[in-house]
Amino acid sequence: MLADPAIDFLADAVLVVHVGIAAFVVGGLALVLLGRAMRWRWVDQVGFRAAHVVAIGIVVAESLFGVVCPLTTLEMWLRSRAGASTYGGGFIEHWIGQVLFYNAPPWVFTACYSAFGLAVLATWWFFPPRRQRRSDRRIARRSR
Image (cartoon, rainbow, N blue to C red; front, side, top):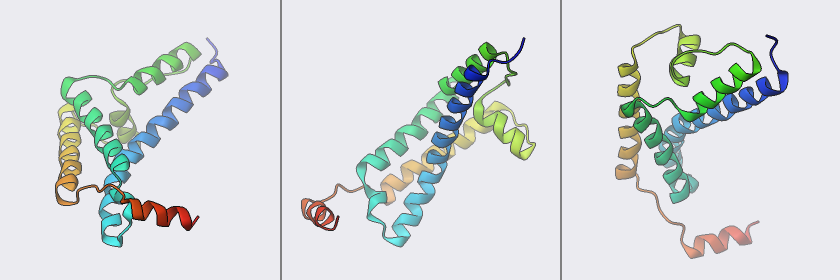
């Protein structure tokens, strides 16, 4: 069966979104730590920090309960509908294997996700997010 390019494009779009979310999860922690050192106020915004902790929380919960990420499932479904090849396992396991040529049992990824999630929670403890004060919002609006 020939691959349907439109459906294959949608699968690629899901993959790009998935990579973006993974980059947000990993890069978000680095941004919080770097931002604190550089005194970037935006890294302390509650919305950014809450989105980050929710994102890693979902990843940890999926791995603890053995649930394949819905984005991986959607991408694989689209690829199979397009007649393209799919991969087994989860998104991170597959792409880390592709990039690093490393194959680990699922419990290793669960442990890594959990440790990373604890690191994110630790940043909430050591560097708590702050709500922006009204005076800061007024100053920000005036400087636009």
